[in-house]
Length: 275
Image 1 (tube, rainbow, N blue to C red):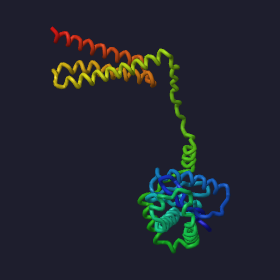
Image 2 (image 1 turned 90 degrees about the vertical axis):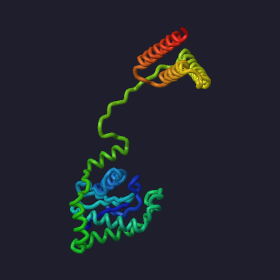
Image 3 (image 1 turned 60 degrees about the vertical axis):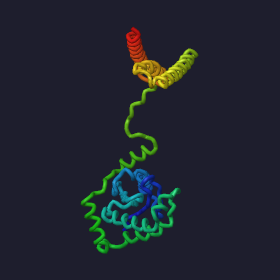
Image 4 (image 1 turned 180 degrees about the vertical axis):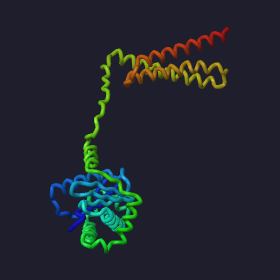
C-alpha cells in the first residue's frame, strides 16, 4: 500500500515550485490537499525547518534547509519518521543535482521538471521497501524528531493562509478614519503662495545676515534667528495647509504664540542694548 502520494521541491523565499512528481490521483480530497500544499509552500519562510499539517485522509509534510524545501502528501497512516526521511533524501538528491546559483536564478515554475524521474524512484523506494530495510535511517530521523519535533499545523492554518494570500483577512479590522479635505479656494491658494514667498525671503535674509555677521558681535545671533524662525513657521504653515493634521488650529495658535513671544523678547533685548 502506498504511503507517499505526491512530492515537490520549492524555493523557500518565494514558494516557486522547482519540480514535482507526476501524480495520478484525482479524488476531490487529494486535489484539495494539493491546493493547501501550494498555499503552504508560499509561506514556508515563516516556519521552522520541519512541519506537518494533518488532514482527514492525507497529511502534508515539509522539510526545508537553505533556500530549498521538499514537500509531500502522504496518507494519514504514514509514520512521520518515514515521511521526513523521504523528504531529507529528496533534498540531498536535489541539492546534489543543481547548484544554488541555478536554483536562485530560476524564474519560471517547474524549471527542473526533469528531476521528476528521481522523485519517482525515491518515492517508489519508500513505498515498496519494508521499514526493516531502512531501520537505521528511520531511527536517526526519529531521534531528531523527538529532540526537535516538527511544527504542527492544521487544515485551518492553511485555509487562513490561503485567505490572507487572496486578501481576505481572518479577523475584523476597524475601518481607517476617512478624512476629507475641503476644496481649495482662491484665497487659500493666495495664502499658500504668500507663505512660500515669505519663507523664501526670510531664508535669504537670514543666510545673508549670517554670512556678514560671523566676525561681528555675538548679539547678531538673535537677529539671524529672527529671520530663520519665521522661515520655519512659514514652511510649517504650508505643511498644515497641504496635508491633514489633527488639531491643526491648535498647532497654528501655539506656533504663532511662541513666535510672538520670541519677537517680543528680541525687541526688548534690542531696546536694552540701544539704551
